[in-house]
Length: 274
Image (cartoon, rainbow, N blue to C red):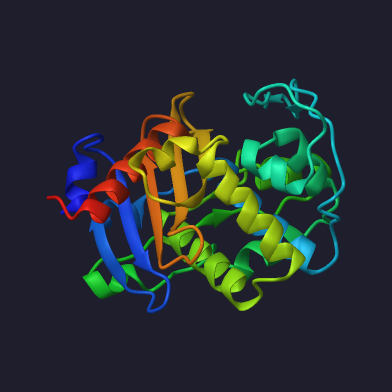
């Protein structure tokens, strides 16, 4: 009922609520459409890749990188919209979704690595969740990037990759399980704190408007055939002890809009209102 209430804000939204422990779909809106939707993921990939690189000691989360605020990669203008800041570390870069920071993270990858990292989360394959509802799933379209520019664009969720909401929910469940299994690791502490800050006061702060503690990430990207943007929110609630994954996809809009929908859903879940 909370999902249906949230969907009043955005009737075209695809909404999924996945149980972290059982991998069961607890609630959904437009599930059939969600199983067939393929869209560029935008910034939702950032925590997934960062976690694995920090866990493998491939990236130092204390390293600080100054945001240029006018990033351009292979003709794509990817200027950040966060407030001006001193150089970011990993936690701060996640909170404010700094494209300059994560472009530098992407430069640390070799051709062929990004696909391996994403597949480890369950992002690039059939999840099996939709099948339980009698729906046939579409699988991600991913073109392994072959050079530095292409790797950066793919990690930033701009080009070379399109995913489904079911795949994103599966990937964030993987992240929740990793954080729970290694709560005191540097990777878990940095990434969990970063996405909690994102939903608390950073770029995904609209997700907290419902008064429920949530950790999550927004994403905004344009379609392949249009300049119109679509929006994502992927989050874990409650933030301190994630029990559910919430994914909201809006065919038209921005990540902040999707976060608003998630906030409404979580507020009505907490209050038990229809």
